[in-house]
Figure 1 (cartoon, rainbow, N blue to C red):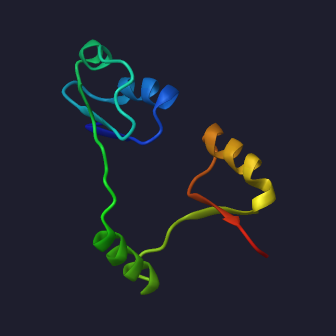
Figure 2: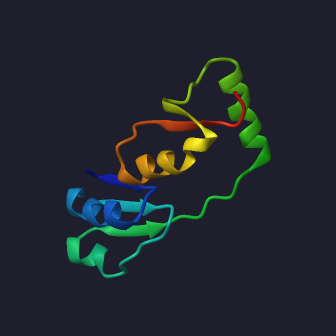
Length: 104
């Protein structure tokens, strides 16, 4: 891979170094957990900090409302199942978002 976008950190980040080709880059939203890892694998690693922007979020919401983009929903669960939803997410077996229903 040329680029890995790491939004999970931890073990996912540790495994991601090995899939990058020499000179590739890992961009991490949670920071680089091991400063020596990029040099060890002959790649670059950078952390990014994202700041929410109300106008950009409004534009994204408008695109969703218009049906131009749709989030991938993996599971819909009750709020009572929040702990189980978190376990599924942490285990990395979910492709898409988990939606928690507040009221049914």
